[in-house]
Image (cartoon, rainbow, N blue to C red):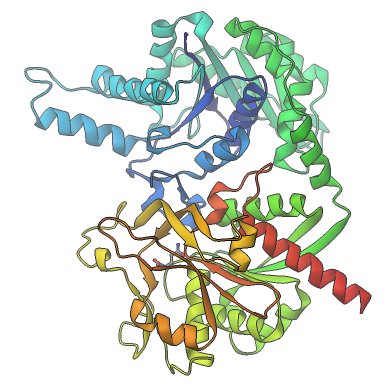
Length: 546
Ligand code: GLN
């Protein structure tokens, strides 16, 4: 088997939706039956995304093997319906770290260590390794950033070299650009794209095809113009215009022949893609028939990308319940004291993961309000922790109970640092990360959601330092908290740590220490999210009947 490589670069502006374009192409190739993997290159110097602010950079996505990655890795997983790992996200930081380590170890003895060939070799090695590890027939490689950035140069040079190593027939260059529309002159402007392609050519890369992003479909003459100055055929200029939902992008591109183009240029057999199930899901997404309103009480309200996977999981659960999920982002700092009453306008409350004390009291109030008023509640990671704090304070009578993350001097640290976190040094990659087992108790809501009525073990991904303090578990249980999931006993880690909680006699009150949103897919929605939206739908319908 020859592995073939599809490179995606971007021009004009960042946040163009290169990740969606790359993922859509991947989805179309998967729908043709190919084994596909995807690599995201991030030119920043951080070793991984774990130490960056989600508010600026979007969420930190966690892979099964515990890597803290760029959010595009999550998009690849969702669109390609595959699990990726550490190897699929390459950063400048990782590349240089390894080159410098090798230099110190004497592996380049007598040589002058340089960007070309040492850094570019390391970049190529990582791309090849990702393909090998996945046994992939096709490897998508997305170069983050914008062509012309200083930081992305070594990566562009590496992918330029790769065409010579793997051959013309086994490599393809897509360039994604933006076509702004000027209302005053009523035309799409091609100049930025011209400049971007010229810059790319200056680095020795002639794109084989373009994907132009635009707000509305681009007229043929603009496409022809782009083709002419880009040295590509007009039919190889694809237009990813805005569509109501990202899951509709693969179909938009397929209708323009992007799949057939890829087959032709890579010498692949002509295959009719199996897109029916996907298209059905998109139709449901577009016309769901009913609606629920969910309040997400969090910190980064101005930037939905900070909770991208969560948003997607809610969407997937909406499709499963044939309901549109209308999400309102509520600033947790506005919900303490009087603000909580406004939550009654919603069919469900979700408190997502988070770090730091800001807005904590508002989240505790939101959990209390959900418990007292029978409002469906889903608590993810921090959202479970605040539900436990709330229960401890207001039901178990543990006054001032808190997490030692927010109040180091609390009398009742019901949430406390995990023992293995006590001697952790440094911040990068040191949390409890990745996929860990959770043993679900028989007869709980969680058990029925995961389809393990008699109890059983499932795996979800984690990213946290704190956990429910084992010293308080009995008191919390006595006060009516159900522990529905625990860590099964395993080497180096005590059994019985709380993984999930719920409340009996409440329509839906579930908290998980893990982040099930990371593994939710359009066609395989996450069970806790499906249950949450089902409960929200039930509440909405009941209100209608009343
Ligand atoms: N800050 C909490 C912890 O570290 C919760 C983390 C999260 O929500 N991902 O345990």
